[in-house]
Image 1 (cartoon, one colour):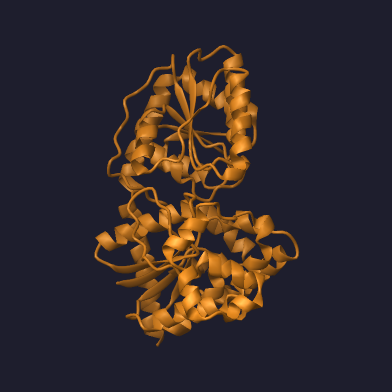
Image 2 (spheres, rainbow, N blue to C red; image 1 turned 135 degrees about the horizontal axis):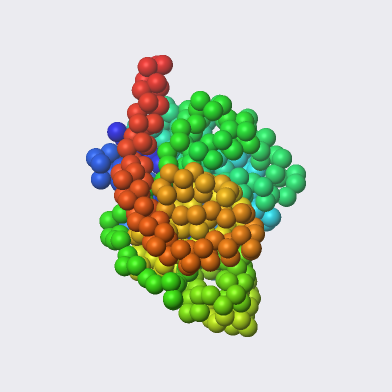
Length: 432
């Protein structure tokens, strides 16, 4: 099957959607498909091998300038090519990419307008390139924030378009008015231009069907899969010196402060005496004070917080091998929860909130326990139970390891994706 997949770069940041889309692309390629992974905005940062093309469309610099001034919407092509060089984009992206929805309302709405927005020139460049490329069997877009491209993509390729649903609701909810209402209106109006949607969890299917008014029959659940190559069942630690871990972006919505508060409460109770807290994940420049605040709280009580930075794939596997229990203290309804699966793939049990995709994931794998959302008391109790009932905690790790390797791998995700793509492409051919 020939597939063209768009992937949205996030500058120097590790992005969960980018990691999923890049890993899926690599697995589909290994399974013999001709897949072209086309980066938008910036080159894609991954924690392993990158499978994306070298050329970047909708270059972040051009998109920003075109939003700011009509002058840049009429700039000659040679200047666009200069600004869209991956090296130039990387240089600017290294200073930090704005991802705060509070500041991106007008740009979001413009992108959703597609060929009628301020980035019309970028749409034309991408469609011109696609018209001169071998026709694919299916085209994919990474989230509904790019649904404004559905119509021109169908017209340029004469092929069906599939859109992934993987957490953009958090961004949309953060938009200021009137941009939030306008963005939702534009997405809902264009749902009919997408041939099928792929949701990364049952939770995401159920939520987005109502939120974006997508007919449920158009949404196919393709549960996450992780790369299990290089993973191994970790050696069991001891309840005397357990290591609790946090893996994710360092930001309030990811709940590191909740974990720190629960850990301090646990330590104040006198057990376990020699535990430690290790943290890994991308630290946005604007979140450095947030991390320092958590460190100060730890230093005033149980001890230091060990922050190891944003690891690549090998570093992440090493981090998980050193952790006895991974805590996912998210303050919002996570539709994915990829680090939880990566932990289970290494035999590490998980503590996660009873919200988003976590209940279905924990129930299906048996690799963790749930706590009540946003509750320091409930999280501390779950952590204490893991220490006091250490044999069961280690058994959870073994169950999670077996379940992920049996049904949550990249191979399983790719096989289900093939089914959806084949069904959509078959319907398209049959209708012509």
